[in-house]
Image (cartoon, rainbow, N blue to C red; front, top):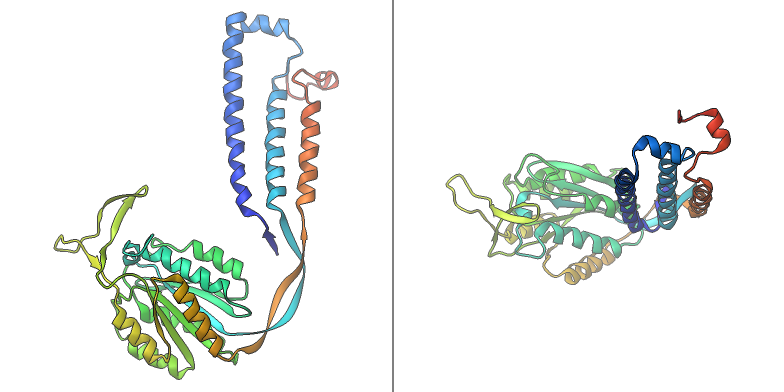
Length: 344
């Protein structure tokens, strides 16, 4: 198991294609300038020891140096052993609506991004609880099974988008069924499903599903994102709005927050509803309700004793720099005799 301590430094890898482009431009400029001075056959006579391969080799050394330095800055850490630890917590599954109605921008930046922000903030306040993530539209799809790895949960959460599921719609019932399948029936932990949605359900019978969950000892909290007044669902191309989704009659669809459905779902499952427009209110609400629930002890296997690995890549970078210094752009006498690169 490994973790990246400073992953944002990976953006520096963009320097490598820039260096390659600069090298190619430099070579083009050199050839153009040399052509003005003399013909190619005379240049070879004037500089017989000039290597064709060495500049490419120096470029490779520079690129490898940049790569090694970037990885050193990211500082990968490797877990050296697995430990079984005991924790007290609640099993929580987030059911995230990724239907197209979640692209409505009545709540900034849009309903889906707001929902992901809410889940992130809730995860930040969790201690010892296990979490899983389900995404749904017309069907439900498992995104992350029950785990104690909060960093992995955040990483998977960022990948959630409205293009994940080809069929569109909002099937809350399927999401609840799949969320329930995440729980271990033999585990005596408290179980909770948190549904984050605008409540536009196209399947119905959510009350029946909620009652079944309640009988199984699973609570459901619901968080509504959006506004009851609604907003059109934008169609974008390269971040620019090109139009809005229309119905079969050619009318612009107005997607509205369906609070009554979300309230009914929470009530039938013995849970609570909270409007999601204010992030801090949602976080405080979830924190308060989780604090009132009994936490059960369970065992979890975790990697521990993570060790830094940056020093190896820093050493490689230094080695590549020294190699680059000693790689001159003229032919090496013993390599010239071997003629490894078929240079005449």
